[in-house]
Length: 158
Image 1 (cartoon, helix red, strand yellow):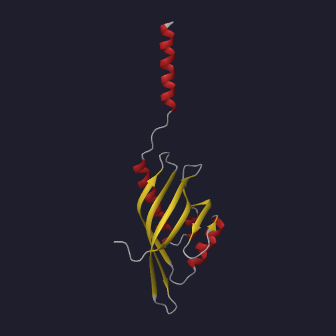
Image 2 (cartoon, helix red, strand yellow; image 1 turned 60 degrees about the vertical axis):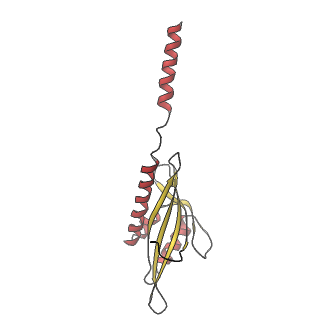
Image 3 (cartoon, one colour; image 1 turned 180 degrees about the vertical axis):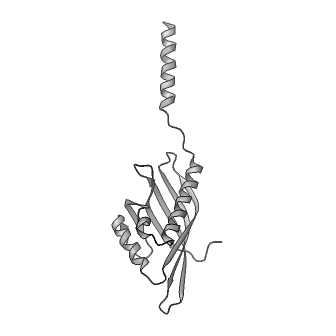
């Protein structure tokens, strides 16, 4: 009888240990998300606007400065296409830090951006900004931006 109980406990222990999920390496996931954001910035700078739209989730929200919130990928696409038609328009950004949830399916980035465009008389306008992006892994395990907000900074980051 003792042997059968011992066998049951051993089998239960093996089953329970195999069911537990492997802990997420939050540091590695943070570096991965920061690199993804850098790649997104480079893609947009290369002019591949349609591919850059895919970085947003279908239900994403964008909160641009001094404008109403934009809900969903269609509204965001319209905003991006309109912005890209501004003479001299360029945008780039660089992540400064990342935080990843314990489950590894949500994260956020603190970033800085630079927006450039031509002014009314053709003079360059450069705006330095502060950014927060929130990310979620989709059903395929791909990071998608679900919230994007920025505003201008009083001066460029050091």
